[in-house]
Image (cartoon, rainbow, N blue to C red; front, side):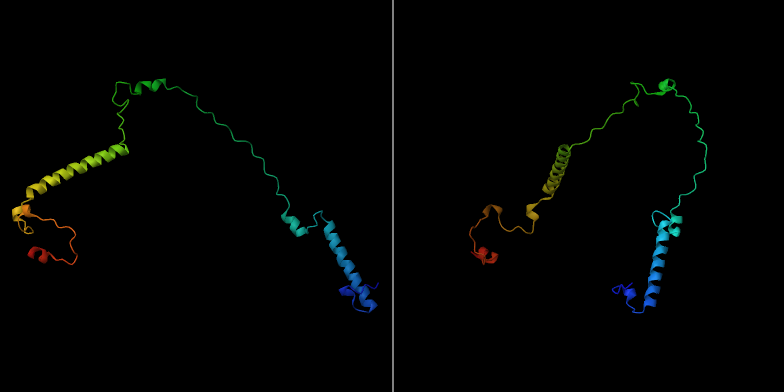
Amino acid sequence: MGDYNDAMMRNKDPAVQSRTKARNRASILRLKLIGQSHPTSLTSNLLKHLEPRPPLEYKPPPEKRKCPPYTGLAQFVSNFAETGDPEYAPPVQKAETKAQKRARIHKIRLENGAIKAAEELQKYNPSNDPNISGDPYKTLFVAKLNYETTEHRIKRE
């Protein structure tokens, strides 16, 4: 009768202790009864959600339709193109490879450069050029020239 370590039984009055024990036993029995109602010990509210649905209504299988029978292509062979027709095998255009494309572009650039050089040669007139001074056959090339030397000083010497 005296389980004094239990939190509910700390009251020293025997009447209070017996009432508390009776209440504890009743609540335990209630919990056991709830657990005995179903093997999974779930409440009736939860079991309602887990009930199976009613079985589906029977429907007869759909009727199979009859497909038309297979036919051949012999009646259409006369419409096909024959070997002599131009539609039979149109010419296949071959694609250009990278090397061929590079060679073609190189050739076009060379031709454009030659045309441009010919035009510039016709326009060239050295006697009318304002930047030319002196005789081109009397040109002197000087090496190891000091950086501080000016053009005026070279012409003076």
